[in-house]
Image 1: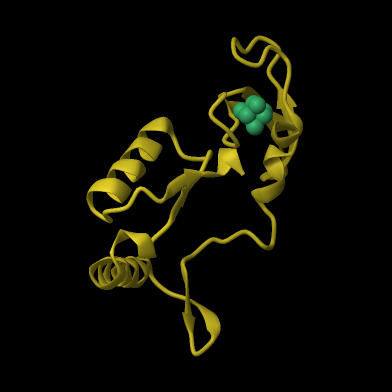
Image 2 (image 1 turned 180 degrees about the vertical axis):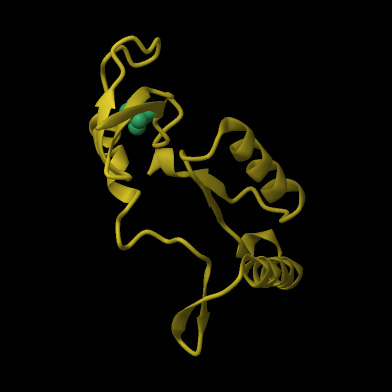
Length: 133
Ligand code: SF4
């Protein structure tokens, strides 16, 4: 069994967590005793940090709905579709037709960029963050 020190990705606190590895699979999450932020503590989300890594429902590729069915596509196709549709909606309905939800799994810098993109490019203040849900 191996333990790898990393940072919890579930919120911006940045708690230190050891991922437990067995037979090339992540099987557990444990607090870091000496971590300056978490000091041997994790919240309930941190204790479950490992759960999504090998979960069968985890999204591992972009999906687009085609003929009513979610279909795996390349990142290029997914990003082209997203850019085209966001532009179309913004140009026909204005910013009020768009809402953006950001994630605590993103870094502060990524969240800053997303709110800038939302306000400056998508022309809307309709942006929120999962930490408020
Ligand atoms: S363990 Fe809980 S408080 Fe700490 S970073 Fe993860 S989600 Fe946030």
